[in-house]
Length: 243
Image (cartoon, rainbow, N blue to C red; front, side):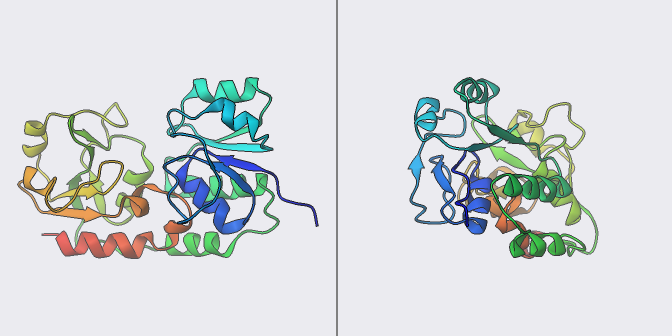
């Protein structure tokens, strides 16, 4: 049996997906690739500042990237070095399922992994977060305050759970909105993930007049094995906070 391709992943969720499907295929990953725990591969910097020369030195057969998380200039440098780069584009749950299948096939997977089938099944009819649809503001950063805008994977995840992002029609995908404007919005809920900014019970909820749902950023924003548990995990957190 031939060995799987040597893979470098520049996306934490794709790192987790490859590790769960093709043990031993990964030879490099970013400093932000925290799942699975104890992953023993070369660390090649961040998603926005990867060490491209170090990646080239690993001689990977394939580099996995994402059009949102990684900078085009870095990907161009890798291609110039003669490397093959697969770039995913994920804005919805169906996008994620399709792109995961494409990326894993490119990495040498001979069959669709069970966890991906489980993720597909989990999102066929996810439970609503409340008896009625909720309007929510979804900050992802503070200092300055940034929120989910249009065409985001996390926004689609929430919409499928019955939570409508009030900035879903904004012209930007991650707009900066002053806190006073966020506080003045007509919303039922503030959804506060623990990444990329680590909102906690003591850092974030006090900023909003509506109830706040502290949710797992990995389940809200990562597309990979966590998608199989995401509807259950997120729904529990949203229901606990829903008015």
